[in-house]
Image 1 (cartoon, rainbow, N blue to C red):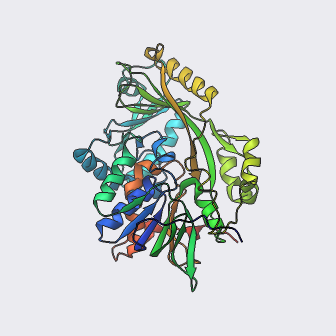
Image 2 (cartoon, rainbow, N blue to C red):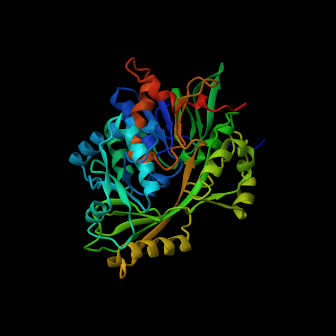
Image 3 (cartoon, helix red, strand yellow):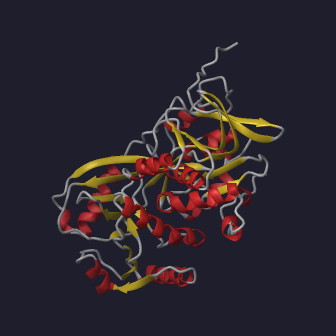
Length: 430
């Protein structure tokens, strides 16, 4: 018999809710539940906010979101403003613009805006001259832009740690460097979790594990349709005369950082590694791959064999894959960085002498329809999932946490029609 690798810690053994994952979604859910008076513990295999929650662009946006996400995006602006009043998270209502290089793109923006206005978005279409004035001039040929003065940015490297402190102040017990290995199920219902530090009981468990959620759920026969997309971004040294709004320039994104530099990324350069799950989920993701073929790059390499070697079934007594990779530190792509910088310098010559201050990579958890799962799991009572935010989670994280808390708490004033768009059951997993 294999010797147990578990050891105990001085944390109470029973909770109302246990959260798996210390990213912005898990932290926001824990914070929301604690404010409702529930006893909540959050377990993080590494350190809070160390993966995608601190590696994203930092956009707080309504523009060009799927219409299903817009109610959350509009509600969360007030939360960001109030949070910034309490503590500095780098939140600024900078405004955000999507440049259009053709009348066809302007027509697409117009169509989206007409639908979004019905939900409450306060955006507008700008002509060429107005778009150029918005950014203080540009060499990039423009037909116009879609713009919202209500959108803004925050600093991802600041936010998770601060939300963790707020959650802890509200009563959440946060346990870092402690992986949850799996669920404790009795009578067909989740009654707790098994961690590397022993068993902890709970009436409800939330899997908010980001890119790790599919592996975790799969160990218990739950087929979570989620893959990973690799992305690269970087921050520049300070520049005094760059655009003051966040921009989607078509070939790049660019937004002011609180340091005086800019956070930049290359569009149409996200990498989808072909892995064993790519074949298992091929028909689920094929429509998205085909529709977004210009935005995504498929790559076959050593990642396939690395993931092939990861066990998809493991016992609660064994060291799990989660403990073997406390923080996934994605490697940025140098070519992508160079291309993004070239694009920005063409559009804004004042960036010519700007240097790269830091660079990073990240892995994004994506679903077939690029919408998150915020839902209970009908086949496994007591288990809830908040994952698959597809690169959209940072800005709406607080609202998503409130929604997840409402589902767990079963609030009478829940907007069930809104929740349906994020239901686990929307996927035919037969």
